Every structure is written in C-alpha cells, then in structure tokens.
Image (cartoon, rainbow, N blue to C red; front, side, top):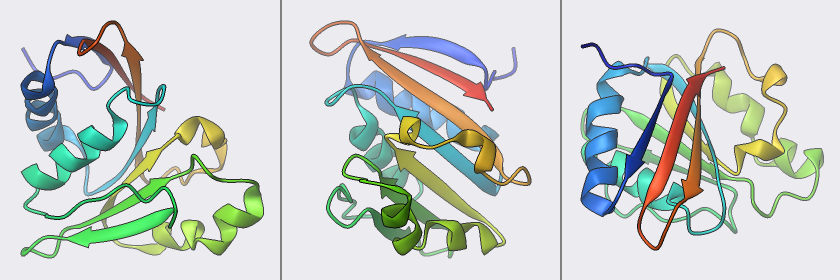
Length: 148
C-alpha cells in the first residue's frame, strides 16, 4: 500500500516518531513546506531534529529566539527551520526574510507554530503539508498530515 500524505497516525515513543519521518520523507517534493502545529511539548522540535538527522544534518536547535535557522547537508540539501512562537506581527515575519525563502529552487522549509500563518499566502508552486500534533499521553501523540 502506498504511503498516504493525508493520514493520521499515533506514535507511542520517540523511536516510533523517528520511524514516522523515515517513512514520510521520501514522499515529499524538493520544494516542500512542512507546516507544524500543536501544543508546547507535542513533538514539533523533536520532529525537526529527527528530520535533520535523517537528512544528514547536525546540531539542530530550536530557532525560537532567532525565528529562522538554516541547515545544509553534505549533498547540498537545505533545511530552513522557522519557529513562529514568538512572532508578534507580520513585520517580525517580514524582517526574518521569510518570503525570500520561496525564491529558492528547492528546499525543505519547516515552520513550527504554522497556525500563526494564513496558508493562503504561501506559494502554490511548493508542496504544502500540514502536520498537526496532539498529545494523547506522556509520550503518545496523534499526528495528522494533510496536503493544503
């Protein structure tokens, strides 16, 4: 059965969360925006760290204070990681260089706290995958993904 980008999955621990990303990443385009939302501690930053590790990138941190951090692997693949938690207004977003990111030929752009954005303004020529995290217990999470 092929992998479905519009899906729902429950993970019980960190190794299942990493496995989820191992399975999903081969199905995303070279120009992809992952739009992550969920409560504090739901697994957004941990997911970004797993994604970066799978792609061969190291030392990934949360860009909560910087808003945007960029990583690159040995093959030249880039990952732009944004955290909009501390975003005050559209001017903060504009000053981060956010809109310039979409001029790239390819990149994986991951946005934490994406629910603070209006998805209608995102470029249509990029694959847009919404990833919602819901805490079900201490380590159990429901992850819902859908193309937007």
